Image (cartoon, helix red, strand yellow):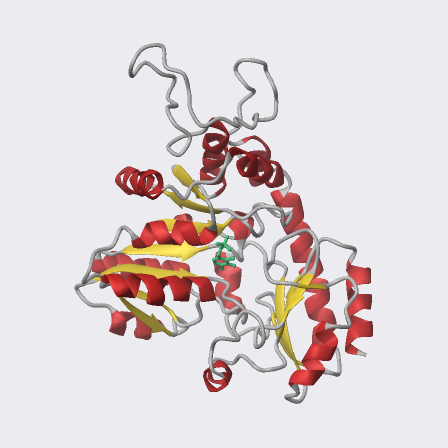
Length: 379
Ligand SMILES: *Cc1c(COP(=O)(O)O)cnc(C)c1O
């Protein structure tokens, strides 16, 4: 089955009691049993809920995986992966990591005796050098935030296989429409469903998809034991969002290209970071492992004035200044003073994160209007 058909049909059956074509919101905590242990597969909604089951199956299908698991937030899904680890275990991850993941690793799980090494995954020798017999997980994300670097998923999968450790990919920025890490050899794929999958900026949720039955069973045990599961209303909203994922992603990609080309030609713009540009340092890897380049774009202004950047950020009328991404509406943000403000300025600059860097989540509005908005804000 092709992607768009799966986005609409996968995981979803007409409701057996009424024929309702849309999966009902099973707003219930418990399920009546005919006799002790004699039930219909549902006992308590932390463990199972039919609306959640439909969504988990839909997400598994979109990532070409066998098992989907939903969590209350994206962070809760990464937290569940960390709970596969024991004191003394090591994780090799990228130095260009989502801030919340870095915080979870270093401020929570380091305290439980797990060791994390952060390396530049643009050069795979750094990954090889960081591997030890105690490495149990390689964790990456691609494209990265906010510089849209691309990491070679298949090459990392080969390293993980050689060392017999798990390999997980945060696929939030790409969405399953653009990239399927399990097909490239990953063991775990994670999403902040909050972003493109939900797509309407009205839900916070996370998900994992895996192929291995035993791994799925361990994660389902953690999901139920720790209990960070989403409610049925949120699952319904995401099921609804998924039905247009392929259409939304097509438009995000089209608008992304128009905006990236416009910014590239603008006299006040210095660098443009978008993996679809032939000048992007990882463009070849992006072409190999992605089916399109998405709607996330970052750019810097000529000069190094933080005030210039702030003037642009407060002058847009359609792009709203806000955290998050992947919704129908266009957003923009300023990593140096927002998402990455906690990183010391010297370190930020060393990682290529200029004071004038502006990140766009290009939405689904008409591209002409978005270009016009950037034109007046940059002018
Ligand atoms: C937002 C985000 C997360 C965290 O997800 P939440 O749903 O906010 O908990 C993790 N990784 C990436 C790349 C994200 O953009």
